[in-house]
Length: 229
Image 1 (cartoon, rainbow, N blue to C red):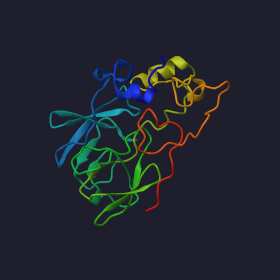
Image 2: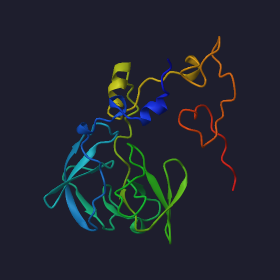
Image 3: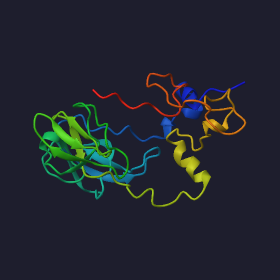
Image 4: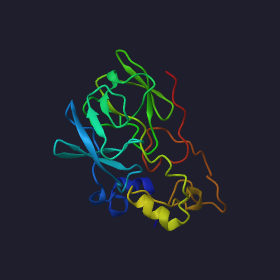
């Protein structure tokens, strides 16, 4: 009897695809208040994240933020100000063009959605009715000027320089992100296990381009090009 595709099994949840939330430090959202200042008390490692976290004390309230490259223990972090210093948090309308930013809000007040992995950053290109930002992918994206972001590049950018060296280390590294460290090719499976399986030798055996509206179990191989508007 065949087994479900990995995409189908992952969608149903279960212990093998559930990230161990009890080990995570915080969901890391930008502070909800508009203005304030805090002091960096410590820099810690967070399981499941590629970058370290900065422990910031805002008048007795402990908050966790993504550590910006160059941030130090004892440094003052401002929220809502206009100083262009790594770690400060402010609105996009106040950030000068050419500034590197991270943890950008998609909508004002959502806490930050974009450019959150270690070593990543976006760049403010222009300001006006909309703020145009060059994303890490190279795409240009428009944001509401009231959206906030943290200034600087996310720390931990050199994490990929040191090799994992063995499969066990890779398994433990990906476990906190609920990501499988091994993946079997579809053409290596039996026909009952995957649309690409079967045959006396490894080959797809038919068209491997699927429609964009296909179900997760059918969406294997290539996707068609986007229609031009």
